[in-house]
Image 1 (cartoon, helix red, strand yellow):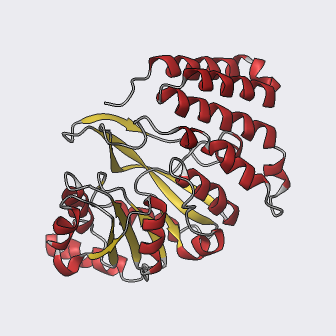
Image 2 (spheres, rainbow, N blue to C red; image 1 turned 120 degrees about the vertical axis):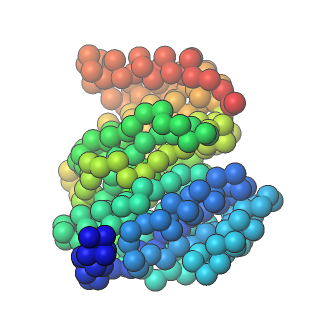
Length: 313
């Protein structure tokens, strides 16, 4: 029975495209073995895996090299996550691209399910699944189910909808351009804003990935001042474009307000409470509708987070 099942699966996968996954890694020796193992356990045949060691000083490269020919290993001087992924995708050959952080994991069916949904929807350029949040010991902490895709959620609310496990079309990536190496805090959101101009996203409501939350996670640690200013820089670059459709450009004030809220959260998480409060004020100036009950509640929650969120662990 198992033999028949595998034969059926093989036939189903035969017409699907090659997928190229990049694993950007910097001093990731503690978890990268688990990450690569989760990729090698995929039930998808045509999967290309590239680990880009971005100047690690621990055993990251040695662990990746132990997987032999199953994984391509590329070493480079430290240049940041965006540069690492750009390098990895440049040497890849898949028609579908993706990445996974060197401390996250994918479920065995993740690649297949995302590709199936992507190929079934010609108008879609990116598919993103639900995912679990795990701790440093791989203990499940919660499940994150992002909302279904809408242009308003992405562009007006700056909701970074895709998480681990997202896959996108190479052709859309090439039109949108690679990740911005000048952004170190939110390069993913910047990229999603740009690739979203090439087509719709699709939310796959299945838990297919695991996001690891630990003391070294970029998302949760204190960061320098300039990283807290990235949301405003990102929005300035985006609205300087001449090719934005009217339905996106009309949300500019709301987008700028949410960029200020995001900046406030980043500064507040890093202990810069005075700067954070200034960004909250800027948000209110950009968007007078913050006086609405819903927006006011959102602002209060962010302000509360500024003063209660722990610093670096």
